[in-house]
Image (cartoon, rainbow, N blue to C red; front, top):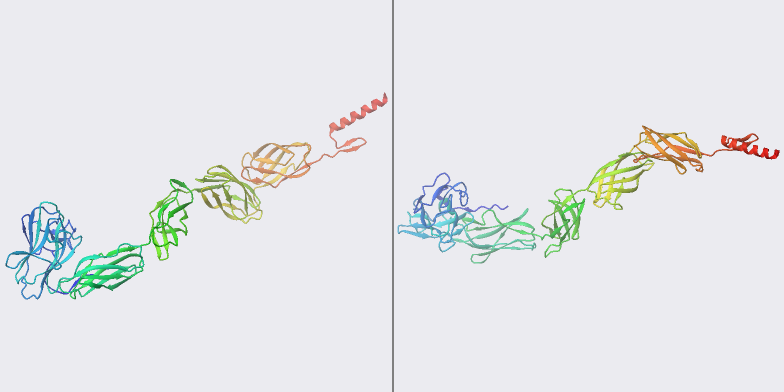
Amino acid sequence: MLLLVAASWATTVASWDLETDDGAFVATGETQQWTWGPVSNGPGGGYDGANAWSTGRTRPYYNESQDYLEIPLPSLAGLGRPMLRLESWRDIAAGDSGTFEADDGNGWRVIEPVGGYPTLQGYTGSSDSWELVALDLSGLGTEPRLRFAFLTDSSGVGDGWTIDNVELLDGDAAPPTFGTVSGPVDTEAYEGPFVVLAEITDDTEVKRADLVWLAGEEGGTVAMTELSPGKYRGEIPGPQLGTVYWQIQAMDGENTALWPTNPPASFRVYLAAPTELSGPEGRYVGTTALMTWLAPPSQHTPIGYELLRGDTVVSTSTSLSAEVALQGDDDRFTVRAVYEAGVGDSSDAYEIDAVLPELLSLSPTTGWPGESLTLSLVGRYLLLADGAVTVGLGEGTTVLGVDVEDVDLARFDLLVDAEAAPGPRDLELFGPTGDLRLTGAFEVLDGDDYPRLTSVVPASLDQGAAATLTLTLSAPCAPDPEVSAGVGIVVESVSVAGNTLAIQVAVAPDAALGSRELVVDDGVRLYRGAKLSVEDRSYTVSRCGVEGAPRLGVLLLALLLMRRRSSRAR
């Protein structure tokens, strides 16, 4: 920020800072509106403290009044060029006026400040800020009187006229004065230059006028050129981007004046923002969202775009759309264009009312190499649908299928490879609401001590047999398991007692011979490891009968032989 300071080298003869006392100024008039003390109205204080003289110190001034404030001037004898200088602030309604009046022994008359009054009536209207005013007292003799005259009519009021920091000086105490000043306005034309024009006059001579500027960490001073008497031109060089601050510093050899007084003037050199940023409307469920916008109305062509959440760039694009990650709160985005010259302004913000889907739990959470499991996945706002969900648990595992039970619940069969390395696995779900991850959701355990069938008693059954099998598991299973012994063996009932299952089975007479694997499925995992053998019945014929045949068969054979013998005897 520029911090130039006005300066003067005239000799001080007398001064009234009006902070500690009223300076012995004398107020007269019909309503005696001139008062001294803390200023709470108008400028809200004095020039450099709380106190000042004002016609509207605590309230707007009165209508239809003539009021005066006289300064106790000392003798001007021996002064080469006596001048009065002061700080002035005003807010005076049309038809009312403030003027300086002097009496050199021939009665009161209006005198003009250096540079003149802003209107023919004197001071009227608003100054907007404190102004440095100088009065040349030369030619008024050695013992003049001086006062401030404040005249009001019957209509309209303002916050009045406030005076502070009054000085009597000997020498050129009047700095150059500024008339019309025009400077750059906000623009996209960053190439520059940026032109400042100013009217500058002085009661003696303007010896130099400089344009001082600052943009970021860059700045400089440019000597202004006098185009014609009192008309000056200066240029701030380009290219520039961002806010540029500037002031004019005019010098007459004894005094320095600034325009404007601090703060300085400024303008923005900008690159246009994209328009009509939009995204999902209403309540939106997802982890990402597609944002779209229109190209900026600019004389420059963007080379890309940046999407921001707050001040952070969250996505970039070379087209008029981009995908952004959502976080469920503060999903408020802006977009800005990137140009060859730099980054442009941000667009209006667009806020997405987002609800993030999340994975809550996976059950079971562990498995052993070689196991087959059925896992249950529970989440929230998943919007699951058959055929639109893919699940993965990483290296060494295979998902055999996914069954969606409702929008937030799915089950899937998992095969853990026999050579799967032990350790945690992240669950990844690719579904309608985006890609989700549940870190460390499942662990492949180390070792051989995994749930399995350790034994079956009896270990073999004949074709056509009915029996009760006793299955022993290495760990308890869930209630109501299903048991499979292969084709030809019907499992009629299953009962569970801890690690033991009692199974009623019937073997078909034509059941395939040989060993088959028993499988217990408790809805979570498959227990394997025990085998049941189906065996054939062996029949051997001897002179005494059929060896090894069932007793009923022996009887039938004996009856048959007896009938043949009886027939022969007859």
